[in-house]
Length: 375
Image (cartoon, rainbow, N blue to C red):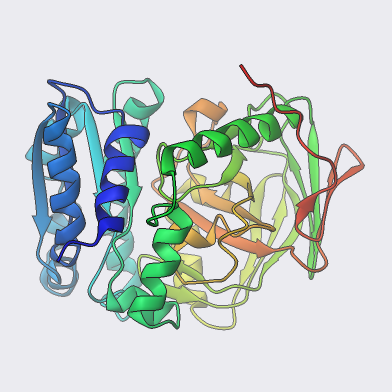
């Protein structure tokens, strides 16, 4: 029996997020564990006249490559992948996995080589997205592995995922995300003239320069679910320290209690109670990996718990996150890197954020309401 929530999510992505049209070449890909949603999105794309196809990967291939591949093989990008990155009109990525910890024990240096190659192609994809040449959206199909990470039963986790996307039986998904878009756009406008943010919280006092950098609303076009506003900070200005109480997870490997200290825009000290070697290997990916490529406010208050999946965790209402590595062209970044690693700072209890010295955020919420412009 089909889950109607899966069908509604597929329609939301094909229609609202990607805006698929007749004749567009469209690819949907993911691990075999996501086949129900892959099939539903494929069906929704065909109904819109798109020239749709799927790319479904067997589980465990990266594990084999990291264990047995040569350095050349680890860094290889398929010519087919390069061609499709340049030619596709639209693309949907499903991040679901049947084993989210499969790569936990992989050698950090070998993973760095593999990730560097992966992010070169991802960065090219983002260049086309920023130029308006490619529509792309990433989402997740609930599996037992993700439910286990989130410390929920599969049924509970499905309710959480589909609730966060607003595709339950009683929901009007498009109306919801259009309203979210209005609110987030208004929030982004509030920050347009800000020169500096000061983020204060437990073991955290960080100054981030944002003068002249546009703030971008994440309104469900590139992620589903969504709910944040972000920019790319000035590359040489970040000063101070920040602590991440939530575990920081990258490509399935977990690092706990990360503390970073910045001087003149760069990480000068990094520590963690576990996974410290991996933390430092990622920061050493390239020269841009020690610089912040993103600072963001998490504003989806329906996501109220940590689930060990960045798709949801970076949007937890009341948190902020920063990303080490490459920034966003649409935010006028100058920082280039093969790394983009989001780390989440929980400000829901004691946090404060000051914009040019004025308190704008306290205990996880803005202190004023946004001025929403309605057409």
